Amino acid sequence: MDPILHELGADSHGPGIMFTKGVVEEAAVVWEALPHFVLACRERLQLDFRLDEVRRSLDLLLQRSRDPQARANIVTLAGIFQSYRTTGIDALELNSGMSPKAAEIVNELLEDELYRKMSSASWKIGVPARIERAVLLFSRYARRIAESRLFKPLANLSSKVISTAVHLPMPDSDIGALVTRTGYMPPIVPLRLQGMRAREPYLAANPPLLIHPSVREHSEQ
Image 1 (cartoon, rainbow, N blue to C red):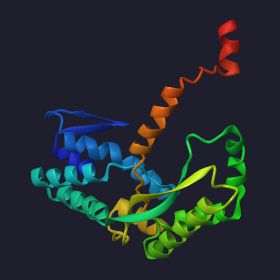
Image 2 (image 1 turned 180 degrees about the vertical axis):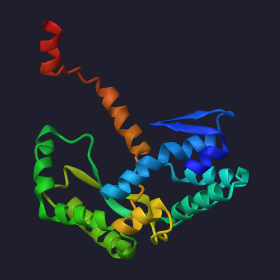
Image 3 (image 1 turned 135 degrees about the vertical axis):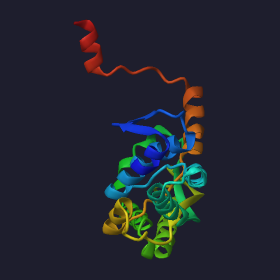
């Protein structure tokens, strides 16, 4: 990002940016998103990521940029994010209205062999050469868990659209070398809608505020 920021008259200071020629929103979008993406690549995580917004920002930055090194970096980043395609997948969605008895079997689900296999398949969705097989297995295990007598009261089967990378970038940049070395491109799983849906019943239930004992002890001192 440094050549891009330099051309825009910006300096990076730790996690922040100082603009001397006026704030360029597109650069701020990319600057904010990149550390999360790099971390997900390095630690092999799934990611809730504003992919379309980052793509648009990179397109606009390329139109504005004239510096050869800055343009080369923008093209590299754009190529990485253009490698993503949407993929439909069957997944599990915990029942927000489950009974207390059903909630007690969550730990059993996490220890279940099928769930462990599904978790393993989810990691392989981030490996471009294994995506098709991994999506097939993940969906199959999710259906089997949702249909099981034990876990049916706990989780529902749902269809989701995620974004997965279809190929690895060339190792001709720092981020390209990182991804190539790990062989992993984080699946992008949008969670904003799920968060809103979970928040509404939570607020409607008006749950009591639970204060951690350490906070209570500190306030009494």
